[in-house]
Image (tube, one colour):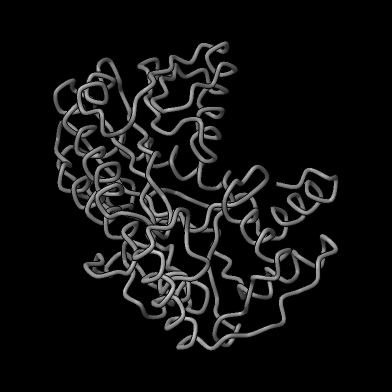
Length: 345
């Protein structure tokens, strides 16, 4: 069993906490870096370092004595100042990489996003050969793409790095995806954008955790100079899409979930060009008035709700040994039972 401590950034978030729980269950010593302490984790032996990702000195020092860094934390969202996203997502990642190099960390597993290949078009069966985005109406994909590029460029014989791109992480305890869907539907603010037939990949949180642990294992087994290992290519210096491998028709999945919870399905439609124009107008309004919070519609949201976003997972299956254990049907049934029990987000 690995006895060198593991550092998890964002270890109190949805994915990060599940990862920490799994590491603790395996008897691994864990250090968490984040902004919100978790006394329950500290009581179980987790060392907590309170810091923002842009605190370069503390972030770099946190890497001392660490064997693997799981960099899960990020500033997420579809709206906000580019500089705020850049400071956390890019400068924070660079600070971690510098700390790893300074303190001799061996492995770096980065939680990226499929949005790094956003191009405004349908992503149907996209694989890792697709180029990183350079133009996007949201700062999140742009800054995550810059951070991913830095992570993969930082791969070396001393520090092996890999980027995982989990898409729409969900499951019991999800604070983002399902709560937003339910909140908008209950306020009558949800519309089917486009044809309503777009297919989207998602990933259950436990499958996403599996992928992170498999990536760490693969980095540890990688030959220092790359090449072939056990029939699979070395993973260091590469990115991988991570999903359930079961694309759903997005609006069918949303409406099935709403019906199961006794909520009326979404029936009102909006054409994508109309939604995009509305998003552009709302963005301008938000920017001019310097309003807080996220706009109800943006060009990025319109594209995400209307277009295909599903991915070829061949590389993850072959080179990480990743096989989703929680199916869409099983995960959805578990989530519905949780919400029906009155544990609404």
